[in-house]
Length: 203
View 1 (tube, helix red, strand yellow):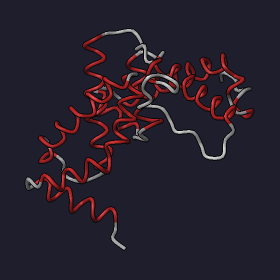
View 2 (spheres, rainbow, N blue to C red):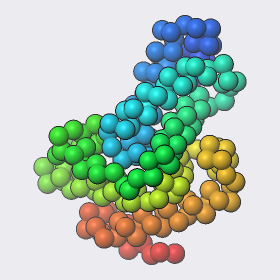
View 3 (tube, rainbow, N blue to C red):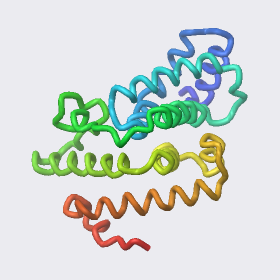
């Protein structure tokens, strides 16, 4: 069985030599996860799709600057940087993304229901996803950025600091405040939360 990591390295090397098919294979590997990050960051499906497309174009143009390491994290940093730049440019309020949540006209960013759930459980799960997304979108752009990069992308403090152009102390502070704000926000819909999360304190 082929080693996925070795295959990725081979595709990257081929793409760096101009092999478009190799780059397209990489796109297929990562476009869904990158779109998910963009959607969480931007708050609406259309903006997320635009940011993801721009990020992939940017990645292709800058492939020569990738010198090893975590390729997925490298792509994710491009997505978050473009998204952050767009949020700063727009300086907008949290997006009205209700049509893009479960039950809306588009469900591009919504999670699929878990198999075996009753219709009522599926509805509750969708409502919980909506509540979590809503709480994340209520954060300021700086806090939302670090939370997406840390808790959704799984990047390290240093990687986040490098991408956001700040220091690790600021990243930790923003992340702590973001998590607390989301936790408090979710207590307003505590009936949707699993029982073990309903009594979380603010500590």
